[in-house]
Image 1 (cartoon, one colour):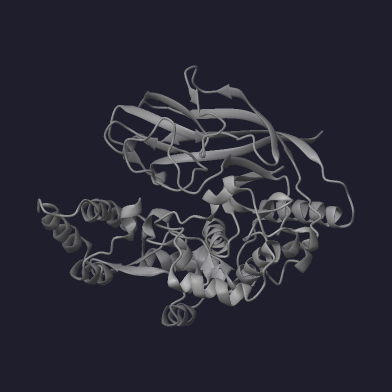
Image 2: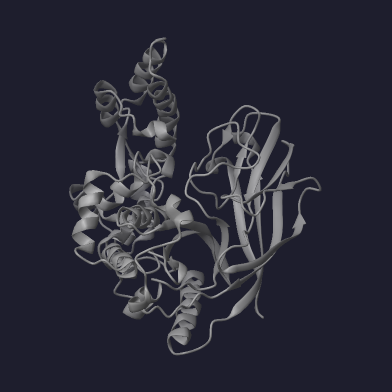
Length: 450
């Protein structure tokens, strides 16, 4: 998607900013009628038609529905509070054809932004229990317990919503575990379909592919098993070398449209690392700046952003993947090989999508860094934040080793997430199937120490 580096023409940006999306789409169509458009500009405008539809889809709540959610979810919420939040620009909304429309997760991001609301909303007990399990295990490692290895059985299933889909045949790609770094082995246990294709282990986004006729009760499901070990490293900065294996030089390169060494990011990186020459300590300074200065916040679908690291570094907020790609970009600017790793956070009691990173230093090799789990918060011990630089828990399912990669076999239409894959992708012979047109469920079925 290198065409995202091409800017939009100013009249189009004006109409989009005003929320006149119908007019904006008409303007794009008129431009596309020209036979003399440069190829990259044509691709950019073709995708902008797609992006506008995604923007509208991402802001489903009317003002009335948004207020109802706030009043129903927050104890003693008032009209005065609503006006205050609107005046301060805290609630995420845009104007669509003259009407206020609120972002899909505006409420959750409000709670992230203003911690005082946490005590006024109902707590997720499963999430609280999972956090307790995680912190207890990290505290044990920090206290001297030896790293453990686990055998995990998990499953994911997706179910298309017939009423929202056009077409007759559904193609499905579900994430499948990769053997790399902390993952020792992975194997298929069961599928919903007898015919399938598993991408090779070296595929950057490893998937299992299935297809079927669209019908009532259609479900795609895969159950798998993998063995994963905790990563707990003892790094002596004095032993770190400034050189690295030449084959890893690809992890120092720009990868437009997101991993781009913009003047702002170069300047910011230079400010952070200063005159430090040790690669490990340079990466640590970048990690500490992000975890101390960027607050966690849900993002729009990644396809809506022209440059994710720039968004995070200027807004000082972002989710796990956005923080990860900022860290990767800044590490590469600082001369430190860095790459993507993602899949699930797979705790013994639940699973959810998650992204993190790997950075490389000699002679220790690839080391993990989880920016969002390491984020500084008042409800989390500082030792937890320090742990996630160079170490990683085993509550993971690794399916992806690169930010931005093609599927095997390739999709015919735009992916819902062009850069990552955690919950699966679907399409018919006519169109992509977006996330609101299918349900998904991830389960951890067993989590046993071996």
